[in-house]
Image 1 (cartoon, rainbow over the protein chains, first blue to last red):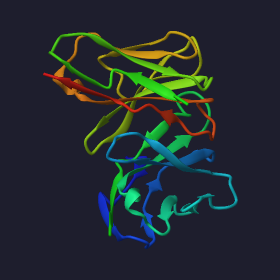
Image 2 (cartoon, chains in turn cyan, green; image 1 turned 180 degrees about the vertical axis):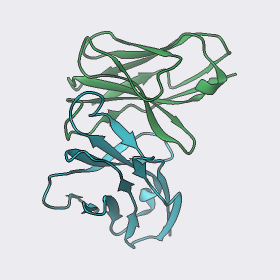
Image 3 (spheres, rainbow over the protein chains, first blue to last red; image 1 turned 60 degrees about the vertical axis):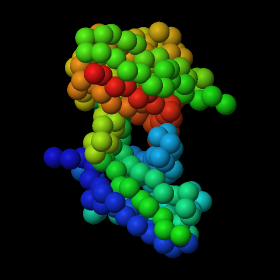
Image 4 (spheres, each protein chain N blue to C red; image 1 turned 180 degrees about the horizontal axis):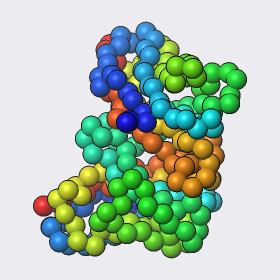
Amino acid sequence: AQKITQTQPGMFVQEKEAVTLDCTYDTSDPSYGLFWYKQPSSGEMIFLIYQGSYDQQNATEGRYSLNFQKARKSANLVISASQLGDSAMYFCAMREGYGGSQGNLIFGKGTKLSVKP
Amino acid sequence: NAGVTQTPKFQVLKTGQSMTLQCAQDMNHNSMYWYRQDPGMGLRLIYYSASEGTTDKGEVPNGYNVSRLNKREFSLRLESAAPSQTSVYFCASSPYRGSGQPQHFGDGTRLSIL
């Protein structure tokens, strides 16, 4: 079973509008972390935002916020006021626990976001 | 302001040839990682080094070897390249493996095996 599921292979959004990218995860570990990365067409991986399983509040970083719904095991990325430069692949990733084989990141397959002018 | 540096950026190999991908970080991170990215697959972990002197297999280690040369450098070796190893390879580092600190990635190496 996939640990990280991103159900939207591709999405379009109008410039200046908000967009939500979906991510669901599967773990039985009470301690885990969720990350979002952006990969523009140039290929580099850019860290956007992090949410820990024990964090009480949803994480925010500028125009990025993470809609964390623990009971539903979802960690959706919300981008407000989309810009043309937001066009990229977006990857959700999870780190389970801290020890042994845990502690490594498991990535979803990504969502390609296209921002229309 | 280098962060994680990978060399080379592009490489074409013939089946059966060997090569080493180099990675160095200047952030004094303890943990380093090698991933491969294939179309539609996201990133998959090949090997990681939780700290200097240790290395462990990730999800897809077959056909690869690694060396943690020192705290800064972590290399990935293909002993006998196969077309199935055509991919984009990313090196990453983080302060510690199990922390909430993000992994920082290099720009990737695009490897084609004919």
